[in-house]
Image (cartoon, rainbow, N blue to C red; front, side, top):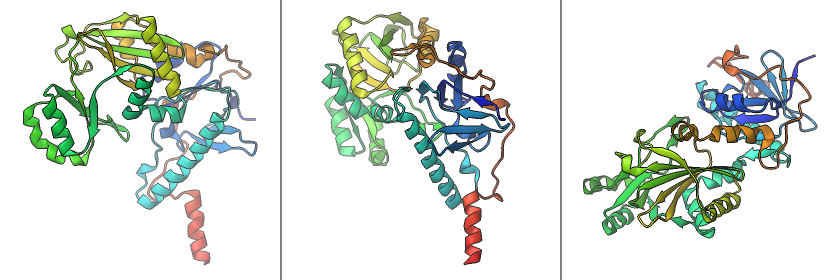
Length: 366
């Protein structure tokens, strides 16, 4: 009989994600977390959707991982499937398409279970990552938002920067596949105008620069709010607080009115987790910059002495809003540490998928 493992929490990410292990270690003793690493699919494990629509993973040693008792899911930062090493691009696309459709079915089964708490639900998280959508929802709940445009039109960008020289600009996204392509938010300078003739190649965000003394990072998990404040007066680069790690950061609180608006925004977006950025302008008004539905928080814990990691661990343990201690039927005999496992199988250019091999046999027959 195979060993059977019933995780109570699924984390969709990779072992390279520095957030995974610290959070798993801080979860309650009654919880059984399992890392669902797409990059190891077909290498460390295979998967089955049974006739009665159960989801079962089979590890290299025969251990079965059943999703029957999952209570929480952290849709952290799923990796990519590992089939790009196949030389034939047509075969790669076929395998990727079928693998993607299979996992979409797995996720649909999990989403049908109303008892599972997602951090965050996939579709709302995807929608919340769109800055224009964020601004609409933020205005609806009464937040003050930044003025700006997202454009690939040279004329519109030139008009915007000419109306107010105090303009900042930044990329619309920092991710390109599995590779981070990152540039900081920068202050517009007139000598940059000559580069606008290639703006059509990629949309860019242009915003009015807000002078102020403080930036705020507000992290929300369920109905819990943890705020931290960056003192821009100590920063050598106030346009982007990520650039100067020596900027003073401290935990702080927000007034009740602002907290209500933030929770209303989270509810409107359908999120249980979010990292919101604000800037306090010279009049003391907190201006909404953006929300990152999968934003980081460990750097805030390190710099400001907060315990957002503990908040997340408790939520994933089922101890958050509406949760309870996990009910464990089987002991956690296997914890899915993929980095210690030998591979189940490896694809090479000579190997072919099951369906492709059968297809070639059909070609010969006909």
